Amino acid sequence: MTETTDTAAVVRAAAAGIKVGDRIRFVPLGGTGVRWWTVRVRDERFILATMQAPFRPKSELIYTVVDLTGWQRTYNGVGPGVVRSSLNALGGGWDTDDEGMAAALAGLQSGKWELSVRRVLAVQSIEIKGAAR
Image 1 (tube, rainbow, N blue to C red):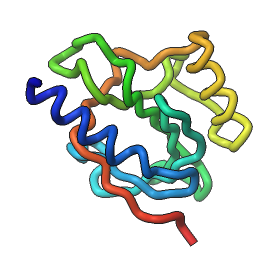
Image 2 (spheres, rainbow, N blue to C red; image 1 turned 30 degrees about the vertical axis):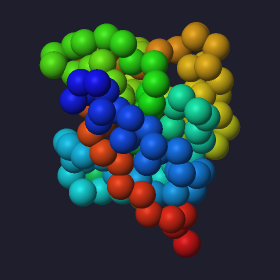
Image 3 (cartoon, rainbow, N blue to C red; image 1 turned 90 degrees about the horizontal axis):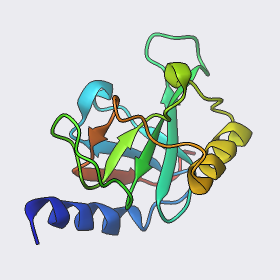
């Protein structure tokens, strides 16, 4: 195995225990710093999570999608392996309420939507906290 596949296997193993409501953050920390994301929906392949948008009114959320198994591309030194990005939608926007996140997951599962290649970030590790109280 290569270093990339070793890292991906470790991330997938850690992600297996992630449940809806858990709080997660990614290494490398990237543009969101040390802030935690809340898992909204997930399946075996995708985890969709939201967090408060920095410097925006309370309850204005941003989202990210983690692809645990399917990313086979390489772009700007990222991939193949476990990655996160937004959806490949005009403007990158998506409804972040429960129904919107469920619809996004359904679109990913059906192939209607895919991750944005331009915004893709590598995931080398996922830290997990239990559900927010």
